[in-house]
Length: 304
Image 1 (cartoon, rainbow, N blue to C red):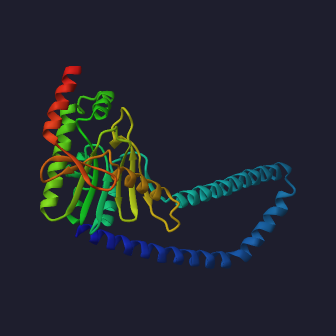
Image 2 (spheres, helix red, strand yellow):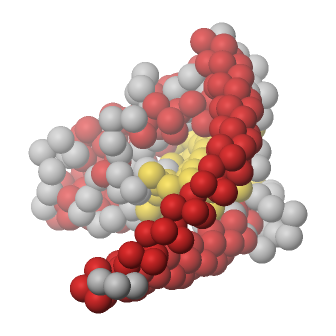
Image 3 (cartoon, helix red, strand yellow):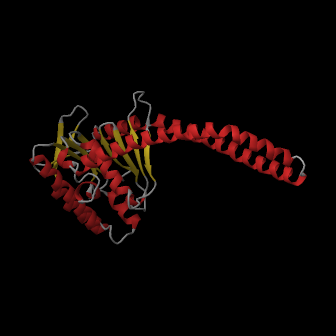
């Protein structure tokens, strides 16, 4: 309710600002038109005096040269910025958050809430905790309003996931913490399914490449670094365009390929089992997730 009211106020302020801008332009045009005759007389009188003073004439020429350099530099920069803006629009880039400042999380969360109501959430990430479970996460409030979700998360007991946690070498990002975060994400998805939402989860075994959320025609993207927390890395917002040649199409195709891969098992939220299927969708094998987890955990302990 608050965000709807804030959006309405924001729209009214933008409309008022547009009207005020046009009013100021019309007023300035009228003032310039009234002052132009007297201004021209003053300029001619000033120029007649300047012609007799060589030093002042040189100073004026230098000032004019500097102004011309500044104007042409501004025009060149504007043309370059327009070219970059056109390239960004063609790629579908509509927003960029270079780092997680104090205001960035609120802006990102508001955008996702505007686009996520009544849609199916498509997401790929690591543990999913900071996105789904954490109350200040970007999708914590969107999940209650969505129709369903297709989620890809890292298998917390895979060897590549363990290698990434070791590479980060951070006391707050241990094996136990990561596995607990995945467990809480699974518990949340179970609750959503119990509410009647169409929720599907798959667990992949390799190291995470991107954290990505797709809501309708908008896509939020961050990349994972081998030894950095994803929350400190920039986030990009991409939008689908009608030409289908933007980065939105590229990354949705990437997700679809991963989602349909026969090497990635689906997590049965009702029976806590990993279900392996062939390319035709027929079931090949089921593995108990907890049993598989204990066996792999014991193997890692022996290696260590």
